[in-house]
Length: 141
Image 1: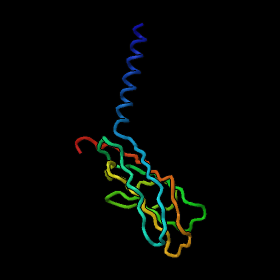
Image 2: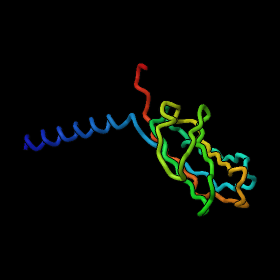
Image 3: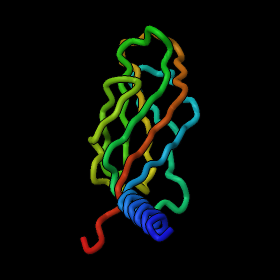
Image 4: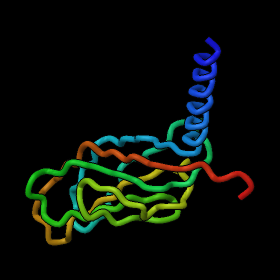
């Protein structure tokens, strides 16, 4: 009986230790409504994607994004912007550490531009989403 209690106590302590090490990291997911692009050469911003209320201070470690564009859309330019820096996007879906170290509690905005020579007419981009991975700053730093 004592051995079973000791084993249970050890498992509980190990579990608490693992949980404690995971407390310094997290992620949040945000979405924005569809955006319409109509004028080639003009940058159009989607609505800002804001982190959840009450998010603790943290620094971005990586971001993932995705959006859906109509098939055959030529040379769409896209950026994921934090208030301090923009990250050029090379595909409609991806992951990057290009915003690493920036505050995770700031809103992000997707920006798009059709090339000046585009003849696509009005274009609707849907499924705008970001996932922000972050870590809490170490105490004393």
